[in-house]
Image 1 (cartoon, rainbow, N blue to C red):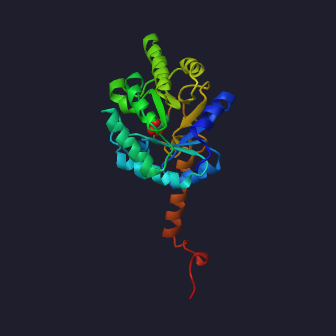
Image 2 (image 1 turned 90 degrees about the vertical axis):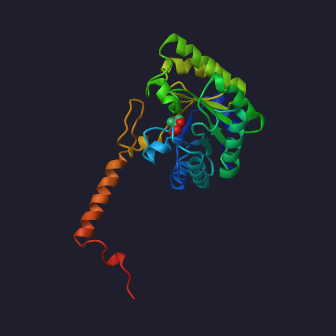
Image 3 (image 1 turned 180 degrees about the vertical axis):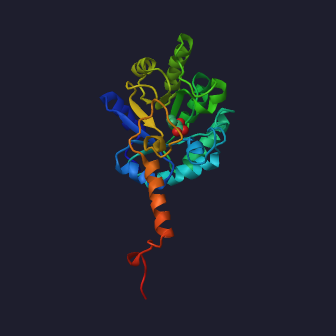
Length: 267
Ligand code: KIV
């Protein structure tokens, strides 16, 4: 049983301790991140872009998310594992959402699910929470609505949208969500929302006042060098390391320098 729970996260907010989250899609990275003290491993549907090369998250499937969440869970001891519910697995009816989220909880061993949306989704969040499924909300730039939002743009810059986002956050808290992701919203608005809520906010492109921060792992490692954004800080430059190692391997194989005697077996 992982030691980070929804209760831990609430206590961290109360004590002013920052919550650290990263996306994670496999057991190997889960082991490394868990050992580094990351609190939340979010199996984001961003895996459809980062790993599967799709243009958006929209075509991610429930089977994909169940597979990746199961393998992340194998590598996690301390961290809380959260499965991002893919497009149309929770928006049609609350009963449908319950069936799909219930399947994720039963089959993967994760501790919570994440869903995108605000006030219209509150009855669904309530239904899930009432049967014991912890739910993380996600508002602001919600990638599953990228076409309706007109692209990957900062949300809540005008007063009407800012007010709606505040009401969305409150509705999610009232419906029983244990945390809410704020994606691509102005720092001042994220700060106001964070102060009003009793549940933690986890920001991505939402400034420093959120209770925690999340980034896409492959972006912050500099592994996905086809993506860059103002809010992403690259803590490593692994794409170049990978290319360089592959070039070196290719050169050594072609020149007959690998494998050497130390890599070969005698009788
Ligand atoms: O899918 C994802 O990776 C996410 C995070 C960026 C919050 O939803």
